[in-house]
Length: 453
Ligand SMILES: [Zn+2]
View 1 (cartoon, rainbow, N blue to C red):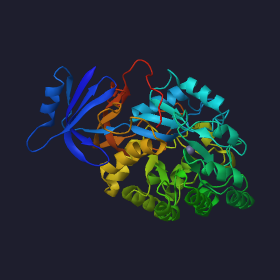
View 2 (view 1 turned 30 degrees about the vertical axis):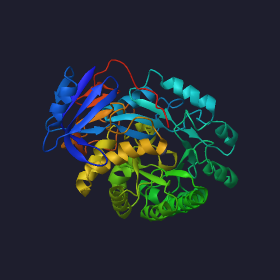
View 3 (view 1 turned 90 degrees about the vertical axis):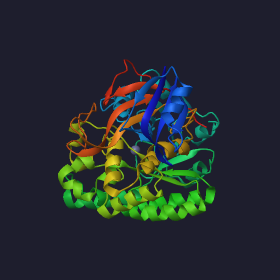
View 4 (view 1 turned 180 degrees about the vertical axis):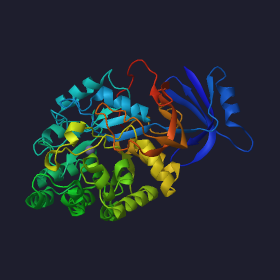
């Protein structure tokens, strides 16, 4: 099938301009922009006379979102969500590719587990899929057995502080060896476990089990983030690590990362739509719903994250989509799981932030599609360029979007009732129209496995 998308505002990380895009089969076959002398649509029609023309006057085209930080809960926690249900939500929200984290049950900490997960997704994922492999204190040999060329995992995920199953890596020589694997992107969850344990013990002594949720950012404190991130940055500067710091939540970390990047330009950072949207003032109304790790911090931190998104110190925005059942989130603090579902609203929440803060759409595209593809080396995706897969979102980025239905198996979203930005008309996945007016129109999942450079 051939399509010509004409009269659209094409937004990339570099520029926004009116133009035309040709799709031939799975790939983008040409991109033209209007100039003083020629109209893109005329040129496109001349080259592709038999293509089906879609006049997108008044709409914008962006590359599909690439979300390299999701928790789809399969295997082991599929009552919360699974590859099929969550990839469907992703695609409806304009996420055409995702990379899932290894803290499933069993965790993805060996080549065998990785193969199992790849086959679980085969034929069941609505969006293009990939997986990270997890590091532990004891699987270094396993990681070293994986050739970086033609690799099957996107990156190595290291939980530097947050104890999730047996995946906490706190052994210094092990950490240094992982950080020394400079052919691999190393993605870290960065919080200091000891500080958190001490803070939690103090809170339990004061409140018992029923700790108010507003205390969460005092337990998972800014200091816990800073201490761990400082340690990671020092190692990455020394060893030349391709370090990607996940879900940065504090102003202090932004400042530290800005400096560290001058010494090691391979250091990159992520935040999520949640941290750009919420702040500690939201605990009173949303409570457990915004309990996530690291914690949502102060409005000063949120403003600093927005500024870092604008100026590029924050490279990427992932969703950190982490569904839990409502019943689970209604438990008291100490047993209430951390995390919130967000992948279906992630793009629209970021568009809302961009609109409020006057951040250009080129930055949104750079942080949500182009940089994630570059950082984990995803082949031929993330860009509107001839030869790339035609993963595209056609939308009105200025239109208000009211979140009425959460759109998740878990049945809730912290964004319900909010007015975000961006009305999605079409999502193209591998050259085919997969979503129309926010709803999936394909009969069966057609997500492809991601390949890496
Ligand atoms: Zn996460």
